[in-house]
Amino acid sequence: MQRGLITGITLGVAMVIFTIQNSVTVPLKLLWMKFSEVPLALILMIAILIGVSITAIFSFIDNQRLKNRIKRLQIKLKAFENQTAEEEASYDSSPTNSENGMTVEGEPGHKFFDY
View 1: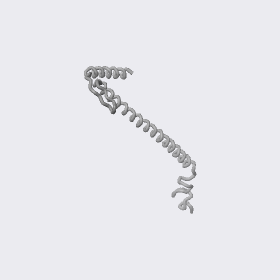
View 2: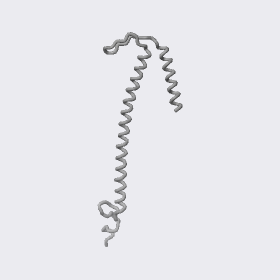
View 3: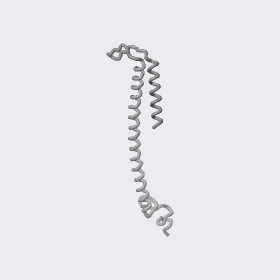
View 4: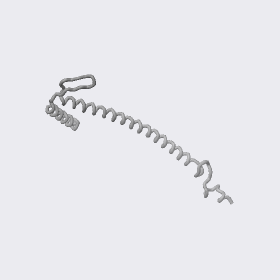
C-alpha cells in the first residue's frame, strides 16, 4: 500500500517537473484536424498514455489466454489422475498381475507350474 502511494507521488512529481520544463507550444496536425498551439508536454503525455494503454490491453488479453490454458490443463490433469486411480484400483483388485486376466510367466497357473 505505502509502496504504491510513494511510487504514485514520485511519478506525479516527475510529471509536474517534466511539464514545467517542456512548456513550449508547437503546432499539431492530426489527420484532418489542425491545432495551432499545443504544449509539447501534453503531446508527449498523451503519446505515453496511448502506449501504456495498448500495452495493458495486450497484456490483459495474453494473461486471460494463459489463465484459460491453465484451467484446461488442470482439467486434463484431473481427468488423467482419475483415470490413473481407476486403473490402479482395477489392477489391485484383479487376481492376476497381468492385463486381460492372463497370467504372467512364473505365476501359478502357468504351464511351468502345471505337472
